Length: 154
Image (cartoon, rainbow, N blue to C red; front, side, top):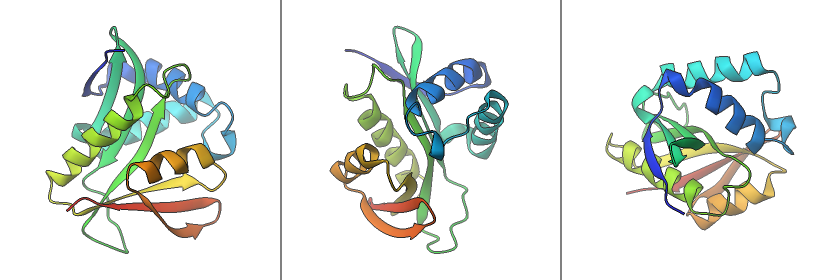
C-alpha cells in the first residue's frame, strides 16, 4: 500500500477527529471521548508545533497522524523531544504507516538537536507498548495509568 506523509493543517481537523476516534475505539480510558475535546486537542497540537505535526494519506485520505513537539519543556531532561500523539485509523494498522510516522517524527526532532525522544503510553495499551519497543523505545517511569517510553536517537 502506498501512502504519503505531509504536514498537518487546520483543514485536517475533521479527519483527525475520525482517525482519533477509530484509533482509540477500545482504549477510551486514555483518550478524549467528546468531539469538542478532540477538536480542542487537535488545535492545541497544531499550535504547540505546527512543523512537527504530520499526517499520513492513502489516496489523499488522511489515515494517520503524529504530533511531536520541539518546544516542549521536559523537567527531567532538556535534551528530549516529545511525541504527544500518534494515531492510525483501524483498517490501516500493520501496514507500516505508524512506523513511518514515527521515523518522520524522529527525523524532525533529531534535526532540532534532540538526542532522545519521549512519549507516554497507557499502561494497558500492550499493543502500542510492543510497537514502541520494536522501534527502540524503552520503558521508563510510571505516572498513574501512564508509562514513559524513551528512545535515544544520537
